[in-house]
Length: 245
Image (cartoon, rainbow, N blue to C red; front, side, top):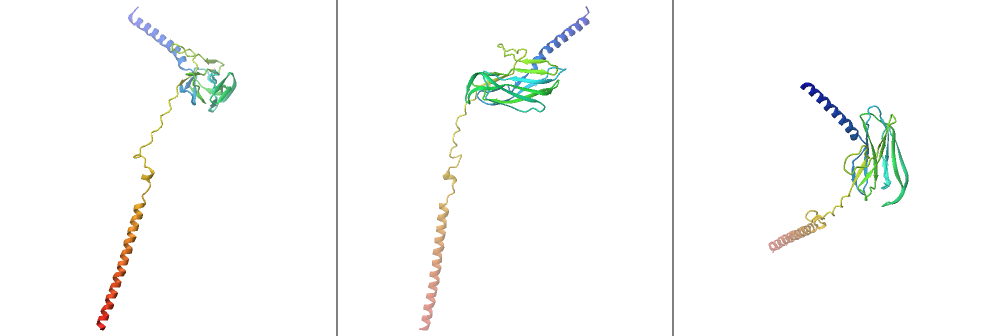
């Protein structure tokens, strides 16, 4: 076999292996996910179920998301998506669950979006607000069912593996993290930073004192002027009497 023929065969084998690898990897990348993928325990959150279309010859026409019954959520609301109908289903829980809002015997068990279309090469996000999130688990799993226009149904319901590898059809998982500790009380600002009432209030006493002193000076000045005029008058009268004598 010539060297050039061997090179061509090697290139063909490499190309085939690459195509096979990509073909196996792409479906794993294009699964239904939940975004953001984490939230704090005990709080409320808004998430979006992101649905890509994996098929080249069909559109996604329906998505069904199953909510956990072992850790039910007391409050669930959905954001309308133009062109899609949404149905929120509540059901009786297998076992009542006690929460800070009371005992739950019923809760949302599934949400279904239908009537719209996710064309090939496109994706759609379906937003949900929910809470309060449980504090006794580190994750919530939301199995999803994706239906295509050709009748194909894909179930994304595989639980996470223990070895960290990704299963063939992973279910959307919301990781729950411990809530942040309450911040310490804010230290009161020092008196130099925030004026106290005494410092902030304008001083009135000096102004009153200066007004009193000014009035006294005017009174004394007026009295002196009167006394001076009286003295002049008396002096003039005495002078006249002296001439008359």
